[in-house]
View (cartoon, rainbow, N blue to C red):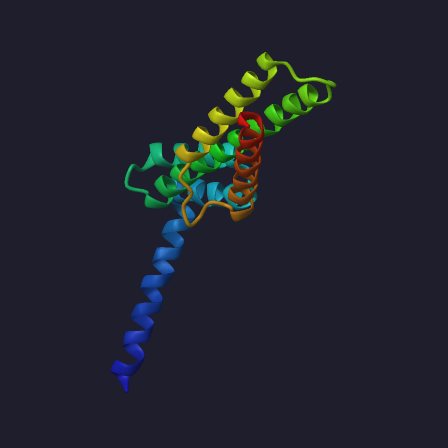
Length: 151
């Protein structure tokens, strides 16, 4: 009977010690904060906190993972921001009654750059699906535009 009680108490003690270690260790405190900001979509803040946590403890895998995932998500955010800017620019060109050959070449170049930029992005399991889908929808729009301009 004594052994049946001793093993669960020992396991509970180890878990309690691990929990306290994570709460007291400054590297893991920063990692937990970074994880929160990552989940909230604040990728810049998550990246800086994870980088700070990593500087405290280079073996902190949580910090390393959040840093890498934040960097990937920031690339997607940058892509979407650029896509919106270029779409607005293309819409302004399209408002003209006639589109010159120079404007067509400009649109073609923008589309090719944005399609190639999307190919370089590499989502992971943790990357926000909405962010990946938004970037993918812009890529599809650029492909459609490129097809129309090259005809």
